[in-house]
Image (cartoon, rainbow, N blue to C red):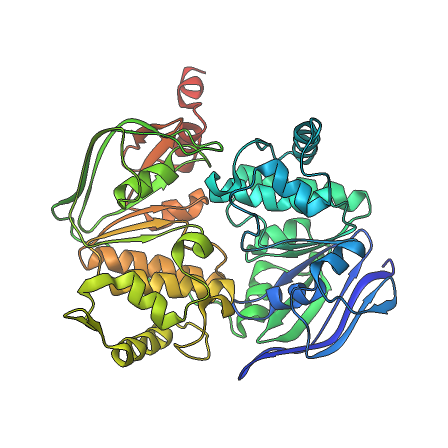
Amino acid sequence: MPAALLTLTAIRKRYGSTEALKGADFSLARGEIHALLGENGAGKSTLMKIAFGLVQPDGGRILVDGAEVIIRNPLAARRLGIGMVHQHFTDIPVFTVAENIALAAGWPPSGRGLRDRVRRLAEEAGLPLDPDALAGELSAGLRQRLEVLKALAGHARILLLDEPTSVLPPSEADTFLGLVQRLRDRGVATVLITHKLQEALAVADRITVLRAGEVIQTGAAQSERPETLATAMLGTAPARPAPRIRAAVGEVVINARDLAIPGAAGGGTGIRNASFQVRAGEVVGLAAVEGNGQRELLRALAGLARPARGTIQVTGPVSFIPEDRTSEGQIGELSLTENLVLSQGRAAPWAQHGWLDWPAAGRRAGELLERFDIRAPGPDVAAERLSGGNQQRQIIANAMERRPRVLLAENPVRGLDLRATAEVYDRLRRAAAEGAAVLVHLPDLDDLLDVADRILVLAAGELIPMPEGAGRDLIGRTMLGTRGQAAAG
């Protein structure tokens, strides 16, 4: 194996009473793709944030090219040739795509050639993006592209990728992984944090598994299988999926007629003349390639966007689980208790006659930590101190706490590990079994087919109901707008 380009030795990190890393060792060779796996809260992101200078370790050593270094901040990391794609977006929402990339790369922030330079970078990476679009108006998938382009613009020789495909549809994820492999051929060393075991096995040269802050194993990817990796991550063999819960279908709870919804800036198409119903007890899957109107539709149903035309009748209460937890799902600086209070509104039992019973809210937040297996020191900790997966669990817990009649979920398993993903799917089915109407969008079509009772496809802003029993091929072709062509052929 080539000499190590990046070496992390005996890295320790503690947050209060939580020991996030317990002497972790990790190395990355030149021209290598090294996958880093583990459950939510295992310490993966913390380890890479230390390598990028975002977090300072409590102990251990960092070596680059065999020489010990102290990486005090991301600027120092970039000078060493280290770039990072974060699980949570780091763009400046009021800046354009071009301005954000220029800021990250140290380019002049304006000028006639900036847009062309950014456009060329995006085309070379196979991740097209409008240089003039405001970052804050992009969908989650497009903002993830921006994060990747920011890292590539700095000519990094070490790339740290924290869940880079979590919001990309399968076709774009494959394109991105192809880019990572091409970068490897040019000598770029890449760390790939992912919960997708098949993804790691397909592209990685080596795989390291972290569990509870400790390295459990490191070895060649070719000697592993999904089952062995899952067992190493969990400490036990993966549990069998819970039996499918099928609820009795009840009254219409979502009734949309002739909807027209304008598209968001930065690539959304919006919705044209959509009519559909969702009944209590149903889990309805919304299948769509990124940017085909699913974002706009879910926000209109949640009352966050106004249709240009048509009517929406929704029987509340309504809970919405957004794809981007950091900008829409929570306020990171506030505690878990404060986020719970904000999510429940005036109908909560601790809100009486204009007063808040904070001790009661705190007790309930603590109960939710246990019920939803949210790994946190306690309900008073700031939400941003949790790992990405545990933040997602907290948002889902707050959504379920409302006992919604309508549950809208936009990629609710983003950044979740195998066990947590299975738990979320089970909770969606249980919500339907208890009488909720569930409308869920997932970028993974196989998962959507597994969790949903029926499928609605959005393609180019048109909503198309799929016939009962429709398979992956028909749904996939409909999503891509090739259904008619295939039938004619």
